[in-house]
Image (cartoon, rainbow, N blue to C red; front, side, top):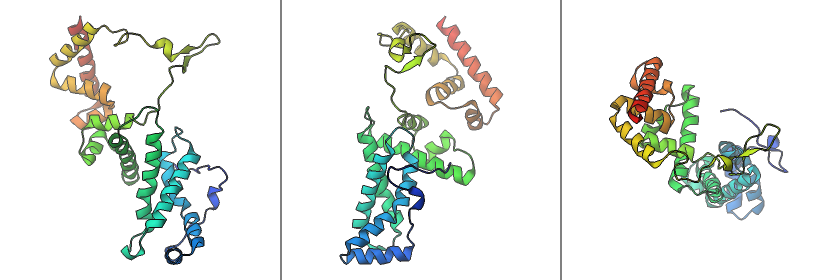
Length: 258
């Protein structure tokens, strides 16, 4: 994962102090004995933890300052409820609460609501991909991700697509010195766009008549979004073979529709 500095308004993130375990333990004892100043020092000394988690969600779709603030809320909750007697690292305990606050903020501020389970799965997938990449130096395949979470590859694709930002129908899609063309101009009033209902039925019928491997390749390429290289690894064949299967499947679809 690329390292970068998160810019937070009115906060110099490069000068944040990091507390040692000994300092943390002493401050927690002071705070639990009623020293309010110790709580402020615990918050200030753990802001780096909030920032490290914020990097996972800082994708340009959400206000970074707001995400940081809700992350600090999770940090404060962790400080208020942490119990030294369990002999647990504070960061291990706090991460869950900080991430929970950020996820709740993102869920509540998404224009189109995505179910909580799908949203949580999407961020769990991102975390898994990051750890896998660090360990193996490459991204995991869809199959490896699906096996890790015990879900289908389609569910993985659906969860990742939930992270895609929504686009306004008034978003310009083309402009060349003249009047811009907006997304709204490209939309059709019919339920299936410019494709007639009969063609949709015919397409479904044509897919059913394809060979099993051809149908699988088309579905995984155009529905799940896999690359030919990923399919080659999955089927233990060359990319060229995958390309031929895909081309044959598309040609057969065209013949069946004609």
